[in-house]
Image (cartoon, rainbow, N blue to C red; front, side, top):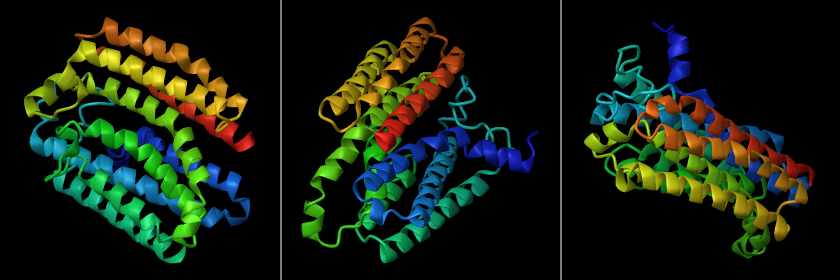
Length: 312
């Protein structure tokens, strides 16, 4: 049995919490590049805490509601990264406690967000409402976005939305006219986030493979259940291609410096994941090494883009 602290660390899946930091940090870097005099370290830290809490709440809700609907309870192909944490299945944590913990994360996130709205940037309220709504109702009723083919779309959109929220936290427009004058920086923020959004979505597809049988029985409609495994592999390749094309386009149109092309060195890593998907199509529990490498490739690609953006 895990210790109580170890169980909660596993519940919140710290390795996945890092994904929340990527768009927040990227949006903050863009804000610093355009408005260095307005950049606030204290608001950066508050934004970081808020987005981590939002993601933690989403993870806890996802674990609870997938257990509640039965998707995780019937999953016989669970891995360390898919099929839920297993902590509710084996009784290490109580479902009610996980639900309360997730709710508390959302509450703390909202509290910090409202402080930012009231003291820094009212426009952040819109991004906060959307972010909390998408996170809370990712698996929770009545929307159950992940059960209605909206999980992948929600995940993709979370990247540019989080980055824009971070941008406006650091560079709050004084008026609607001022907001209109920020068109260039808004476009820059979205463009430089596209590689992370595409690669993150490609990684999302991989994570769905081990859950295919359980999701199909539980009627959790994702891309793999809808299209089948083989067609989803094609979707994975397409999404990776779009990610790297977006990097090249961002450099070509000078949204990223030329050093951003260094991220292309990760292409072989995603190619290796592709070979794993084909090789273990019918035994997806053996995809764990490929999931690890894929996640590492995403982090490395995003880190290269952020460093290029910051120093470029």
